[in-house]
Length: 520
Image (cartoon, rainbow, N blue to C red; front, side, top):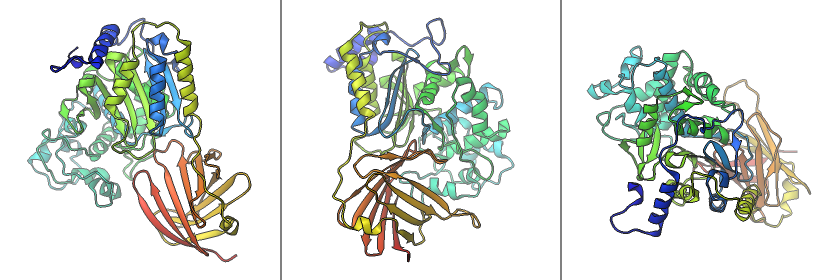
């Protein structure tokens, strides 16, 4: 109730919060005859059957669409009440979760402790790597515990903001042994005293999983977490030369499986009467004992908004698993565009979900509201064409030509554009990472009418691409690999047989390339 009251005024929002609080009661049950767990698939329900307003949820679906998210899945009382996919993203595709991976690594650490494989979160980290050559060992580093890694209070000196080559996180990935690199960084503060976001912390936790279980984090997760929860969409391919899975990023899950992770936490670590992780672990994650940034709190590799009664796993480009226990709600969201100040805030999302809840019991059928929600979901799945320019004579001149590209960090070797009356196409070749390996070839369809064209599935995913002429000599390509949390933009400026290519993605990476047409 304190969350709804202020000392200054009782506003309309306050009154609404009081009404909803009275209607929905307190924390949800962990087990019991009324608690529903998903089987192979989630149960599906109308919002009204679960005490929610379809018209309010339609507004949420529409609002997220203006920020170009990829998907929204809302679960209440164990049933999916909203399942929206924003074109060109499609249902069932595993999505790169970025730093949501960290929260899963934290969950695996909880299982590790519950199984007795790791005795305590108070275990000193260096004791777990006594065979490792670690630099700059001092009293602070010797005092570093597993819990400090889980809370982002390790005290390790770290820079991680713009992902430039000189930042610590990028140098970690370039190191021959990333775990040793993290542990060898100097200490900047006493462990447990200061929150500093540090992707090296969950990387070390993943290395601990490897040491204590004899399996890498992905193998351990398939057996102890994904298997029991019925998660089948997981991909987590990134391992280093030591066989350690990247514990800070790289995990992909489909939205329905993201919701299963959130639902495990909503049910206090219980899954269908099996205690997967300790309830005390969930309670700590929910409480967020560590003040972090932007009004958020942190604990056990989960973020929280205590004043909103919500906690969440967060990844770059708006990957989110949000848990709101007082509403008995889990929301899973995926995205692919750059995060900025206009991003849909976590507080706003929590408020929108709260305002959609009317009761813990079923509401009367509301055909008008139901139609509004169905229309919003249909609109989300419909591609909104971008503006297109007039096709210049140059298109015919360059169609089918192979342009060789000078050496570059993207490893692009050549590209070809094919312009046809119907679907056009693109093709890129790249130099291999290792010598004596063949050149790699990537290709796909390309819409010139402002609408994405999807290519047949390949090993690396499904391409969705569209292109447009910006002038008589400039052509822009927007390329997405569905489920990858980035969008690529290629702007090509042709000058006779020469071309300048300006590449940029929504991670903020930019590169200028130069190429020339090969002799026919």
